[in-house]
Image (cartoon, rainbow, N blue to C red; front, top):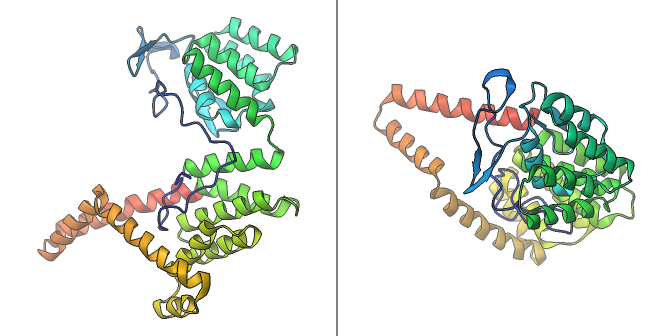
Length: 328
């Protein structure tokens, strides 16, 4: 279970993914899309791009107009960026990748006419989305045969998901990318539309919605979402999330009375306290914690000008981060 959003809740309150494990990506793939070349005519600069010790020759032109990969919610400007996106989001690939606009874009913007023709042939032959995307990876040589094979396998798994599971997978990806408002909109739509019999999937969606609410500091809503998840399928992590969210919005006396009645609530409340302590210890070793300590010392030394400047700077940065989460 991976923590996908920055949440005040203790470790463990993370996004629940689908049954198969989302790949972390081959070791040869960089952690971020390579910087875009900006020299004349939108072409790549002469030379090669090095990816962790492996040289990758760049193909085609750098696009003036991007291609929007809807499932991954990202613009790409080159065929290499497209390959990176496909491998990192292999589980999201489905029939939409076979859109006729993609070969047109590769031919028009990137100058890759041969690849565009190959893709049209693959689609006409009725091949799977995994084979379609694999054709791009093979043509570019983005990754080893083993890496491309693994990506194809994950893509083909994705084609077997229901419409609701695909929408959840997209919301999970948006949440991991800290586009919380967009993820929340999909989760809430799924809660309304999901058939009654889908208890497991509904429980996971409600749980993930609770994680999003917590990341937005909407702890009362988070508690209610975790509670609903637990009512669907009685999993301990959902009840822990419920108690942790209650602890964040309730007054101390109210929370103590709430958890003092015994039973599972009392037992798991002790576990929540332990998780909170562990989360605090983890935070104390971070750069943010050291920064706040330095700021505290600055304030105690009555260096008011420096203190106020730093407080304003930190506050502005936090506001901007929150705006990006709620509008992304």
